[in-house]
Length: 566
View 1: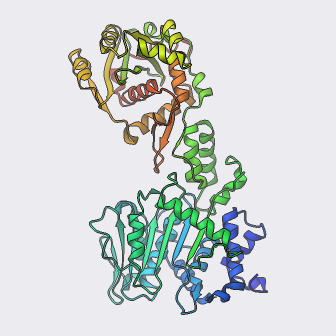
View 2: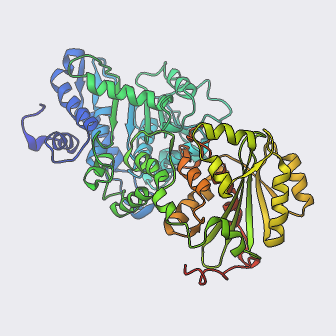
View 3: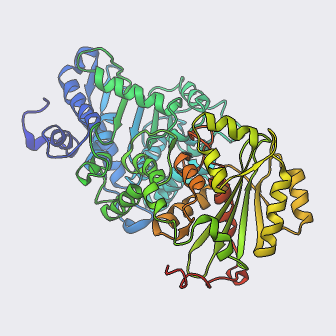
């Protein structure tokens, strides 16, 4: 495997040896990438490939001349870690028989905060201004130009901090350019005016798990056709969408890494490396975290990772986020949300049906989840106090005919009607007059500051509520609106600061609720994936959002906590 003298190994090669001999803890895919390197040193010439050590060292030395611009190493020279050197060693060292680079694509998948953007910026600068390509066009690319600026802004700061580069590379807004070679480096987003007509030498595709379509990849890939040795660099963390261009490239990388030895799948233009934990590893085991975080203890801090892991253990909706972002595991976009053990501990000392009387004359905030006319409707009242607790009252309405049908299907609707947790309305459609009557009674006993409602299909109901003197607020059902109160509700439940009186309907719905997560880690209820009704939880989330954004001075609060022994 390679050279005989161990001491002659470059740090990049030593890293690969250490991985294969167990001195560096690594996952299956990293081991295969290292094995592929040594395999090709022996057999690459059979396919017209050779390794140019000087070319590989040139890129790594160039990287070492650049400086960090922020954080604890601001102003210090960038010292690429052995794993980063291994990537550059391969990508820039392997050559074809005609003397051009072997690899035309780099797929690098690693958990967040492992220096992807910083290392990517060094590659962008090199491709644009040190790769010997006349008129090079290099782009940091992302779904939005602002996202593309993350890598590109780091490149601009690196140029500014290097006296030699500043002499030759000019900066105009987001543009880096060198007049002598007619080369440039710019950010590019799918939302740019046009991504057609480019003549691309290099692409730094940032966080491609968030790329919503394959169009941008294909346009940029096609735009490299007239270049001698173009390079498409895709740097990303694992995603959720298994129909995405990112997952396609993830799977392709796995095929390349598994197929090189026996020749079952060979692509000499593709270099890929995936840092993640292995199948069968316990995600809570600290010993395996370094597999997904090669910069653990350097740019990635173990204490921060421990804190997030403990939080994820207690908050089911956070587990997918932790696994994806911190351990680079591909996850599903939805997950069981509530920690039901913690939820059941939040019953409080007062039964749900008795809560309204004990909360008399208190300020509350309401959320109304209107059903279709033949389904469940839920009203939530959230009562904050000055001790940080939130008491919760839920009311439910359901047409009589629906109750009979759903009871036959195995629900507990009939029992909950008898016990008083669900109000039965006549016929087979909901009668909103029941809701108006209940709110009129609530107005006699409580101060309803505001009521949040889903803006779809609520025009008549809203008009009646406003005539009753209730201030109403539209509430969207997307990630932007739902994420903050959902995450705060998780925290309050874990802290024991919600008191729901053991309402069995609400508890059932809490157990039903599945959360959908977007690539940014925001969550919202997913009614299509939740196994049963979640209307009460949606109403609670909307009401809690109003309570969280209240002016505490308006509340008549703090009068019950000590009496209840909380």
